[in-house]
Length: 160
Image (cartoon, rainbow, N blue to C red; front, side, top):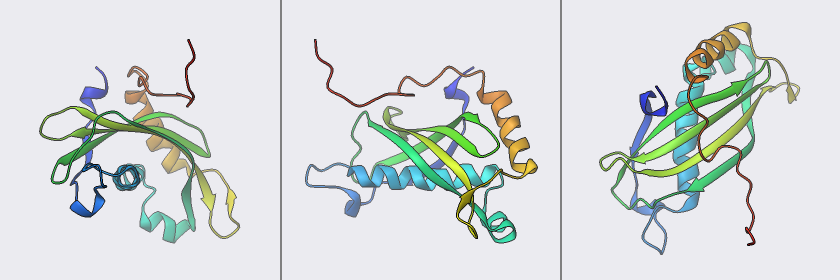
């Protein structure tokens, strides 16, 4: 069992206005598509609009690492799968994989760390017990999956 068993949480079509002069999806729009998937992922944990309204809390991304693996073009349908890598009372660490929906190849990945923030005081605070329990339930499944190849990568020029 592994990431192949993760459900697709988001799917959309690459728009022409998202493509650059190289004829493929521009890097900013990979991030946009991943952000759409993040919204769905957070909603699955209960970090949705009603939660924000009720608690005046939300999440802020504090770090991301995106890898561009294979290009997608205008009109291509892409899908995103998400794996929860870790969590604690204030943070979520997760990993999105974007695939070409028809051909199945991996197009890009992004690793994300978010913090839970009280919007009234703009400070990091613990998530509700309900959210933490949903994260625990998800980790009970995702925790057995192998770590993604791109997890924890650092950028740099490798010298021989």
